[in-house]
Image (tube, rainbow, N blue to C red; front, side):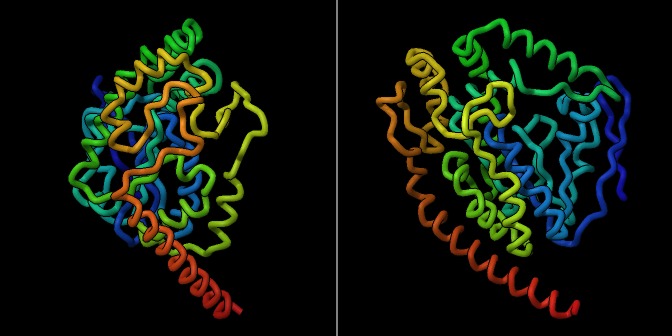
Length: 318
């Protein structure tokens, strides 16, 4: 299996081992913190592996040994290879983690209403996130402990206002990384209750071949819908629009101004109270409508092809 050596800012080195590569062009799965990213990667990791395009998460590998991605000085470019892998785990794009040119047309992006992301982030940092590893460095563990203490010392409104600029910067870095690269965009609000259609569309866009029953099993395993909100769990509340219930109208108004370009770009309404909000998620930009319809048609075609291929393999194996 291929090894990659990374050099950290302090001069130390760490070695990461990639799985054996597949033969198809590499793919990139990108999201943001608290945008449904964990769900996205839990769905796609087993599917990518079964499709013969092994999943590898550089951010998760670094997190497990306690190394912040921003602390890597050299070697990240060697992790990315044009053939053989599905790269995931991204929650934003660090300055030293530039997507390569061959990510063009091979990237899927998942976004979410930034006001809901901040609401979710508060409960995660204050209560549900588990500590990172520390085998190579305790830098991440120290950051984790500091963030938990800060979150516990603030109200949710104070937290949202304080962290808004940082999340805005994350959105800007992801948008900059996507500009000029063909990619498939999904919004959390449009897919959270349509997981099978979402996964089928991702499979179709990336040209993966996976048996329909495999996809169904993966989706069923990850289709978790809490019957009641539990602030101590990672899957606390999946329904969109939670910021309208948790944040004060004046806080939402301030966030609307901070995130105005993001809300406009991705088609989110600027309501400040539940009574102002539309009963359903805001429509995505009109230009995406035909593309979304074609995604679903392509997904259904891909599923039929995959099913026929699986049936043929089963017959040959008898």
